[in-house]
Amino acid sequence: MPAVRFDHFYRYAELTDALKAFAAEYPRLIALESIGKSHEGRDIWLATATNVASGPAIEKPAFWVDGNIHSTEVAASAAVLYFINQLATGYGSDPEITRALDTRAFYICPRINPDGAEWALAEKPKWVRSSTRSYPYEEDAIEGLTVEDIDGNGRILQMRIRDPNGLWKPHPEEARLMVRREPAEVGGTYYRILPEGRLEGYDGFTLKVKKPKQGLDLNRNFPGNWRQEYEQLGAGPFPTSEPEVRAVADFITTHPNISGGVAFHTWAGVLLRPFDHLPDTEMHAEDLWHYQKVGTKGTEITGYPNISVYHEFRYHPKQVIGGAFDWIYDHLGMFSWVVEIWSPMREAGLEKYLYIEWYRDHPIADDLKIFRWSEEKLGGAAHVDWKPFNHPELGAIEIGGWNRFHAFGNPPLQFLEREIARFPKWLLWQALLSPKLELVAAAAEPLGGDTWKLRLVVQNTGWLPSYVSKRALERKVVRGLIAEIALPDGAELVSGKRREDIGQLEGKAYKHTGISFWPDYHVTDDRAKMEWVVRGKAGDRVTLTARHERAGTVRTELQLG
Image (cartoon, rainbow, N blue to C red):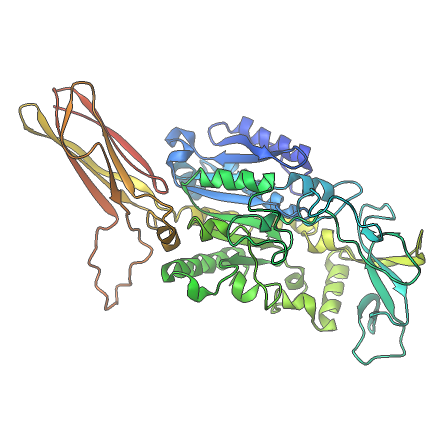
């Protein structure tokens, strides 16, 4: 068994070795391929997980899982690797994993953005939002502060400079903790706070943090609701302009058997659903009902709240997000979720807080709770004591404060496995809701002489309809059930079609309760019956196939006579 560990974050080479080890150890369950190259030329690895003995992945309903599209969110790739480990080691002993791999497929991309993660995990880290490609300009800013680890301890913290006009002051109960001064406050000891880094062109008075020249956000480069830079920062020059996003988009669009997917991010401790840019009133009712059901189950399993991005997770009340992963729902009708791993606020005892609004303003009592949680549970890892440092441009300053990467942007390592273990059951449950085409009956009935009537009956045994979502129907991106007959040489099709679109099969999802005044007029709308009349000789073998790109394939062979 591959020696995967969840007590540290994997760099690219170690992650690659772990994925190759899974494919080598479990060849009947895990296949590994590169779906493209990153900006810096690294492979973007994708694992396909299914029991190949029960059929190829492309002929089964499938579910997508990815992580680490944002560079510093390395716990996301840990969560995805943990899921692969659960699938591989649980097959044959865990009934749900076994059923899922026997009847479904998973397409799993642990690290969409290997370049950015490698920068974040370097011995001397560099933080960028996402891609390492320069955008929109090639050159660095000449003057200002470059965020980096200037004291060489492998962490990027904060710098504080005493200044009577500074915004920050020591907390009245805990001098190590910096909080904002009151609006009309004077007469105290105040500081300015900057990210840790070096300054260029400092004039002794004005301080400005440089924007990294790596201005792309890969999770704004997907086609759905993509907008130009003036409306959506980091979106790139055109949809899927970036090789990482293009690789993902190309794979998903060429694998229409995918019914849904989850993208792992950090940090908020919440399950996010579409729309990013529209209110719930603009969503088909059936799709919204399904999202609400899946969200409720997700909260039950993971403990994370489930919310709408548009209604509860916008960065500004007058702005919406575009070009993000919900593209798979918006354009393709595949149900999408984003998981924001880890909530240090909730860990510190802040149960009810507004996810985005909290960062703009909150009581200083919240800061003290988080500080004390850091002291009691993390040994001070979330907030590092201030230490004097002789800065080459600023002179005598102090470095310390909040340790964002190791305690906020990602779970502290002692909590990593506990946190990422929340998700596999929810992912499995979602995959098992997909439509699933199965054989009900197949028969050859003699009509006399050399003529036979052939019958094929199939049904959708999944929860969701074969088309998956009303959005998919609206966007006309999903074909109906295709029935085909293949005859041996010399046989003749008398009636019926060699290939025919039978339409869609419903599932169990949108049926009313037993106590309802709406009658169910379509009791077997999950089934389809196809018939052909053929002329052939006894002993001939005829192949009947029913296939639906999202529900899977049923294939059977009948012998005449």
